[in-house]
Length: 387
Image (cartoon, rainbow, N blue to C red; front, side, top):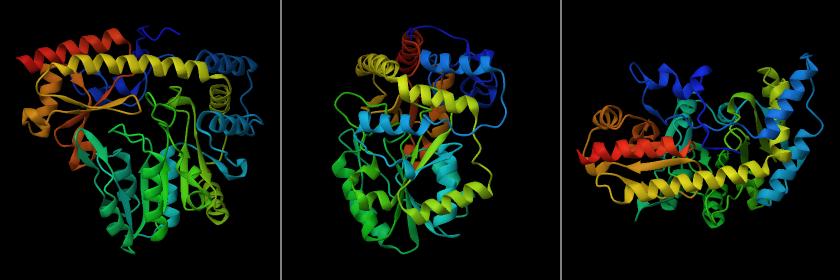
């Protein structure tokens, strides 16, 4: 597993390196804006896909018998979550789950609570489904983000607010919510009949002693007042060839999901997605452990290099391969900060305001790349800041 290997992703239409992301004249920028890794997928996944290719027939297929058991086994062994297979539904992707949940279990104009700065697609899903964005901003205190539980209590008590989109672990600030924090959030939402839809796509990517807690694992009440979005896309860098899973403990809501999946015909199986996901969950643990160590060492490099620089502060992450960088000391407007990073440092990262107004002055950096490339980018940033 050579994570230092440089692979030209421009040989395929990779979004991270595409002109629609890098913009005109951006072909030489440090591409660190899209949330995927620049590493080869696990060998076990590549082998499984090659074996499937060699079969040569790609007609309609059913779900492989081993896929759901592999997912259930993974959750139990990795995260101590005893997941009932009967609660699991297939989905094309996590965003599809969020959109269907909003459509099924809220009405036009209802409020959906988010906790910004947060994954930008939350905003698009809410507005495109004609629901209202209700912000419960996180609180940045002594370099660490916390939930505003008092504010959440007030918002949840409003009968117009029927749902909360949870990001667990949180993108972009890197928090891995503790069991106690999630329990407080559950207590508030359950008390006011607010349904929690939890995006847990970054679940497997945590640092040090920080442990991901599946929201639905808090107990039976939390499980029945939540919908969980799972996918191996981030963990194994297979976003382009995998799908997702919806976990719905409540039988009535699960049936509603099944009916909607059928109505929208999003319940078909993809042969490559099936074999890739089963191989990842069944045999990809060693690769994941290795890539977590490598990303952790990349984080250590960033931490060391930024420690001596004025104008940028690292918000210490607990999980994900995405870093939240604070550039507010530079006193630049959002467009000015973007121009500075692109033109002076040669960086193409995600603009902070994409995650809500609370992201003004910040930028999100993806560090799941070969270390030499990251080191060069940090050199460029240091020169830009010192100049």
